[in-house]
Image 1 (tube, one colour):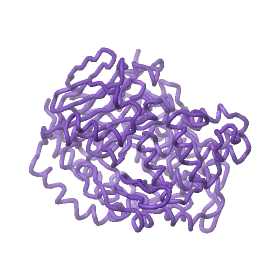
Image 2: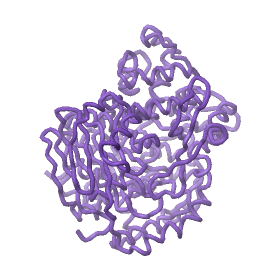
Image 3: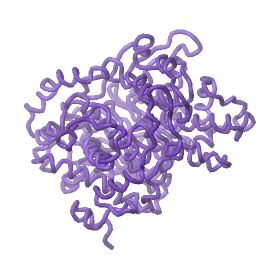
Image 4: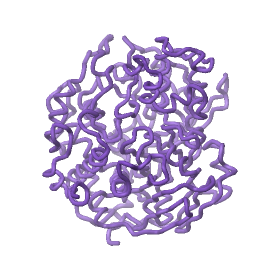
Length: 620
C-alpha cells in the first residue's frame, strides 16, 4: 500500500455465516474514487444490480471513511454509509460526523462491508484489528441512548457506538443510524437504519489506538493551528448558534419550509421563537465537536421544566427545527427539542419524519383522512402533541404511523385521491429545508441529485447566497433567480461536493474560507499523491457520474429529474418575497449539455471514456 492516509484494509463481513474477511484496498480504486462516498459507490456498483432487494441479505451496507478521517485535517471527522435505499429503491448514501469514523480508522480499517443477515440480533466489536460478532438479544427493543452506556461497559469505556433504535429494528424506510450516544450524530437519509435492521445488526462498536499514517506528518499536524483563526472568524455563527442561526434569515428569504411548503405569507414571529439565537439564549448548555473539529456546531440542550422537562443531550439543528417545526407550523421550542430527542432515540431521519407528518397534516386538513384513520390523533397544523405521538407511531409501525413510515411517495399512493399533489419528494426522498423556488441552481441540484431530494449533494444554493469559488469560475455568488448558467453551477458544485464526501471533509469548512486549492494541498500532504485542481474537479465528476450510472441501471432518466408539483406551479408570496417558479426544463438541458449527457439524462459513451468509467460498466 503506497498511499498514506489509508490503513489499506477493509472488513468484509458475512453476517449469515459469521464470516469475517480482511481485504486489501485497491490503489487504482483509491486514485479514481478516493474513499468515503465515492469508494462506497464503487463497491455498491460492483456488488449489486437491478434485482438486489434493498432489505434483502444480498444488499451490502457499506461504512467507509476517507483519507482525511482520523487525521488532524480540520473538520475531517466524518464517514459515509452507502447502500441501495429501501425508501427510494435507488442509490442511497448518508454522511455523518462525530467520532466513530476516526475510531474505525484507528482500529486499522478504512471501511466495513456487511452482507447477509445474522440469525439472531447481534453487534460488532472492533478493537485494534480484532473483530467479534456478539449477541445483542438483550439490546433489541432499546433505543440508541439506552444502549450506548451498556455497550461501553461490555467493550471499552472510550469506545464509540453506531447503532439503530426501534425504527431500524422495525425497518421503517427512513430509519437512521445514530452515533456518539447523546450527541446524536445521524446517518439519517435514505433509510440506512432499515438496511441495518434487516440484517439483525443492532450496533457497530469501535475503539482504536493506531495512528493513521500521513505523508508529511509535521505539516499535517500544523494545519489546525494554521487554519483555525480564519475558519473560526469566517464561520463564527456556526460556532455561536449552530446551523439554526440562519433560520430567521431563511424565513425572510422565503426558503424556509412552511405548512408542507404551501404557506402563503410570512412567519416572522414564530420563526424567532425557534431559531438558533433563541435556542442559545434559553436551552443551550454547551457545544460538542466532531473529531478534528474546531467549530463545534453541535448543540447541547436541557429542558428543566414544563411537559418536556428531562430532555437533555443533542439539540435540534436547522433541518430538524424547520421540518418538524415550521413545516408543521409548530413554534414550541421545548416540544421540538423533545421531538428531536425521540427521533434520535428511535433512530429516525428528522427530515423525512417532518416531511411525512406535514403531509399527513395536510391530508387531515383536506379530509382525506380522519381521526379514525390516525388512531384518534387530531393531526392538525401546529399541534406539538400530534407531532410527538405520530413520531412514536412511526417508529413502532403502529396504525397510521406504519403508512407514514413508508415515506410520502408510498403513503400518498395508499391514501390515494389527489394526495399525490401535495406529497413532496424527489425520486422518493423527502425534501430538506431549502425551498427550491428560492434558488434556481438549488432546484436543478435537487432534481439531479443521485439520492433524490438533497441539498448536500451539491450545496449549490450556497453559491447563490454567500459562497464563491474562483477555481470553479464563480468569483462572486450568483443571483439566485438568474437562470442562465444555473445548470452549469449545479453540476460544478456537485463535482466539488462529491470530493468533499469522499475525502470526508465537513462542508462547513467552505464557509470558513478554505478553498479547493487548500484542500488539494491537504490531500497531497496526507497521501503523498500529486493532484492538481483540475484533477480534483475531474475526480469529483467521475464519482458523480458513477452514481448516475448506478441509477441509470435502475431505470432513472430525465423523467425522474423533476420537482414536486407544488414547486413548479405554486408561487410563494409575501412581504419582500420574489414569487419565483424554477424554469427547470431550460436549466436541465444546460445541465445535461455541460455534463456530456444525452437529453434523456444518460451519460454518453464519450463522457464515460473520458472519465475512465466505460470498461466494466456499460460494456457487455
